[in-house]
Image (cartoon, rainbow, N blue to C red; front, side, top):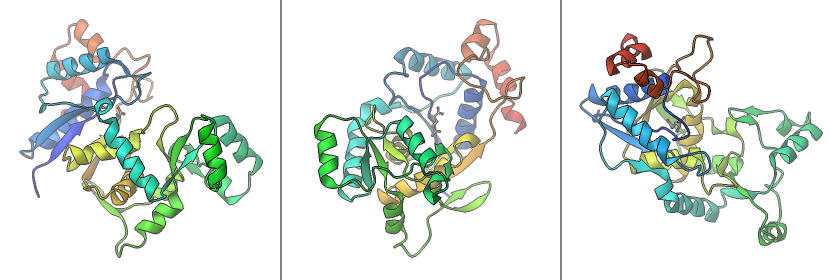
Length: 290
Ligand code: GLU
């Protein structure tokens, strides 16, 4: 097996907390113990929530912890053209469609058709999209777009699956702890690949970037475990490399709740200002006990 190439991919929407430190150390160690490479990616597609000062603070905290990564750091906001290009390819292949629905309309549609098979599903990100805009005819779509109505781009899951079902083998990926996994992207329904406010999404950008950065081992928290189903489908549709995966448990606070960036006193910045050393913080993450 080639040496691991891993990455830590934080979103600069706040300061890093102990959970992030654990995740970064986990990715770095997976590479270093394997003679591999560790990279950094700043997931800053959301211009309203991400701040350059958080990005600077993140790099400063990681360096203080003793982590080193290869340069340049990949910043997603600098690669919007690549995401747009991938989306236009999916559009040309009729695998995505514009969705004009608001969240409120989606919930109302689900409530009004409760009991219908499509309305019952819950996906990893909430209720499954009931497909309202999927069947919209070309004229109506064109009229909405011409009127300037904002739209997201959703994957047409049935079409995408029909495409991948043509392959002789099922879609799989390797979870280094749990073995071969069979992809079931339909659990996401017609997921959003480009948001109304941002011309991409976490899922699309992360998959494209892992490919662009040559990542062969994706490590991430258990909260994103199910995302691999959708990511594997996107990899197949865009003919991208398929990395292996490892998932780690999430650190919880004293209340048993998972650590969040908000309302969290255990940011690395706070711990540092209280006099904690890098070794103290590493010990607090419990990484050496895993
Ligand atoms: N940017 C995501 C986060 O901060 C994680 C990205 C990933 O591991 O794919 O939660």
